[in-house]
Amino acid sequence: MPLIEALNLTKIYKVRKTVLGSGRSSSILARILFGESFTGRIVYRELKALDNVSFRVDRGSMAGLIGLNGSGKTTLLKVVSGLVLQDGGVIRVLGEELPERRSLHVTPIIEVNLNPYLTGRQNLEYLAAFFDIGREELVSRVRNASSIMEIEDRADDRVLRYSSGMVAD
Picture 1 (cartoon, rainbow, N blue to C red):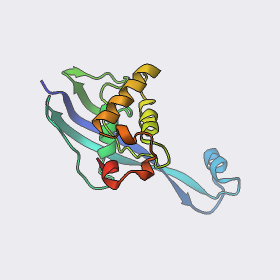
Picture 2 (cartoon, rainbow, N blue to C red; picture 1 turned 180 degrees about the vertical axis):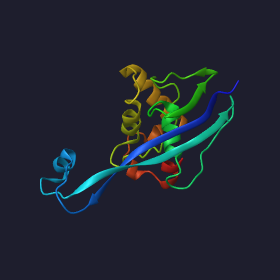
Picture 3 (cartoon, one colour; picture 1 turned 90 degrees about the vertical axis):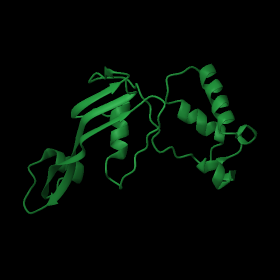
Picture 4 (tube, one colour; picture 1 turned 135 degrees about the horizontal axis):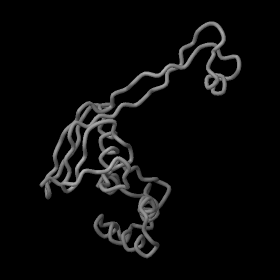
């Protein structure tokens, strides 16, 4: 049984585009956004971020996403994690189909950018705060992450003082 399975995932975003033109806009939204003197209109186009994407990740395996900018990598991770709902397709985790409305079941890493002006510990605490855990558990996890990342002795230094190798690892 696969750990994660996605079948024919589709996600379509509506993208707003402003079209300048002559005459008064009939759109109240356009006048609110751009002022009473706005002449033009707002149109929407569909952007298909995911188009029937299917994949499978087995237990104990690693998977990565490689693609051009704008190819849907982040959208795919957001859909699988439950941050964004798909417009079509099915996601199964451990053989169970995820409901349409769901809490996070899978938490992928999505481009973690460290704040260089915070310490390593503060950055870890900030990231850990996104999860619904108590203070004691947060401190324990931050201590464990510091150990895994081998930065215990530098955890209270600002990240801007870290070497590029420390930040990249």
